[in-house]
Length: 527
Image (cartoon, rainbow, N blue to C red; front, side, top):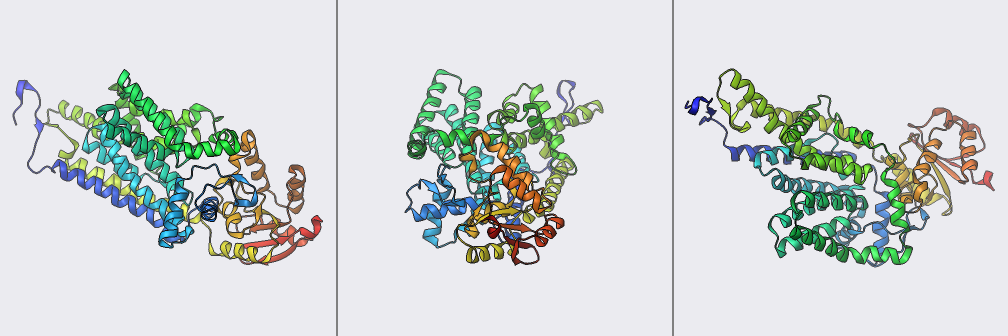
């Protein structure tokens, strides 16, 4: 082994894995595992995961209005402004009409398909930022198998969230290319992807603006770069104006100002940042260790972009910051393995007068280690997937809602009792108005566009009802909050057994019951 100038040599063995083959192996494994992880929950559940009820009705409203943006949505009979960015609804409506696929089937599978495409979009962005195929492939694999990291994108409501994430990644990539290369083609690509991101999801619109501004700060802070950024903003405003101008003309700025209150801006910054960065994710905190190693390496080398991008979403919009920060954190985890770990190994080998490693792909032990890590994360993600499967409607609830639609008066007002204080992630709460076609007094979805500063307080109010264990508690809650009801539907296996007993012993009429669902008629007592 040649050692010029007395320095320790570099390992370069013919038996080492070829770099290109290593990249293909890691990237292919990540993509394959990512597809399996995103597909299996929907296959097992047989129904859209968690949420999506409001989106089902908004897709139907769009068809009923002949593809013209409706003024309000019929969801939950509340005249909620049809102010939500409509791209996902138009895509689902068009596919449903052309291929005759039921909307509810599209809510089950479109988010999964889009989420898989986001893995490929992330790989493009990772290559552009990290400027190394090995790091980019590893970052992509980490993103694909992060336990729970894809949950919000494959749910029924992921129709808009996954679409927004896809175009956020593509817009970041396009903006990087624009600042680096310029050109009309890159300008068109940047404006198009930014516009599609804005038209996909309200929170993603804010994160796209923040991410592009951050990239301008690092890559485009010149007179030419500022001019390019200006035209991207102008072009995006122009191409999205057909939507936001329509909403403003109909309702003013009220819906947009109201929805900002759902962003959890009052949450403590350091607490939110801690939750984002120090999330354990898995039983063995492999990703956490690698992320912290990547952060330390980046700070030591004064490479600030990825660290700044981790922090930025907490400032821009805390509610979904953990989802957006996952992108730079996945890249930092890759840096933690390819740079920090390699540095420590070479430091140890140098002290022992052993040949240095030029690249992690040249070590069979490291190759085996990284494949074991990816496989472990994949297996743990499979296990975690069952929690998401459980958070979807079962046949018993679907049957009860169909019975409700056919056998209760259209003007009925329901309290939905599940015992779950997490109102926004309770599938029965959201799907009931869409499938039973009756008004739910306890469903929160859609009210972020109307309640304004009262939104968070209203969440607590609805959550308090779910803790009731008696008829008296329910009636006091109804009177104190001036929320009337004529019927109750309760999920027996998750609510208090005492509550079911007190309702049976009272004057409420039990009109439907199976092993999981009970429906009571209280209309006679309310007259």
